[in-house]
Image (cartoon, rainbow, N blue to C red; front, side):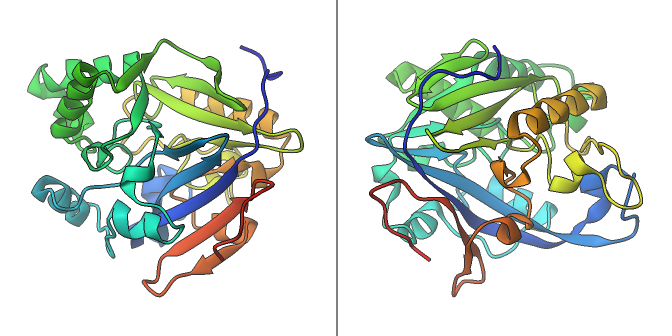
Length: 295
């Protein structure tokens, strides 16, 4: 699959923060290459893409009613939890209004609330589901790779298949919907992470999930001005991740505003953003031709 993609669409794009880790260890993002001994703000967000007759979520956040999710959040120092219902209300929607969910990968903070969206069809890579099923049923010697996964999320995804609401994709896809295309990163951060390309007649954006935690992974930082792979909580290798960084930057033509990273607080500097009364952020990346602002 090349860079020249087929269809275009007209979408609004919002980045919706639902929780935060205000004092995350910076080395977790920079894999020990930079910012040793420092902390950084980790945003926890999902992305709403609205237009062409659909309300689409890229990732869906966390169901904090789950005690397993509460324990994971505590372990990852996640604060200020907000449910998908509370977060979507900021843009006039409810979970029932969501038509499509595209999880970038199956980690607990990206695919951790599928059960709260009764009308959504889910699009996930088959290799992602199969990879986690294999690890969950395998030897305890691989347990370290399961630290960011809730087995209940994998089980629920399989149940959605029985309902006909899980669509398992076989690799990269042009035109999943008008102007929406899928790339896949194999054995990097996860087994088969999805990158979502959103293209209109006048601009384009790429949502990269946890391929990077912060833009500094792709651009480097002053003390290390090279690719910095975020291997913490990853199942695969650094080389694969860095190759994907190169692909992302080539697609974006080095325009960093086109690259959307859900954990990156720098998003608020690159796009119009409102700090909400709950001390979380609502970012407006793009408005479709008939949409109004929520800022």
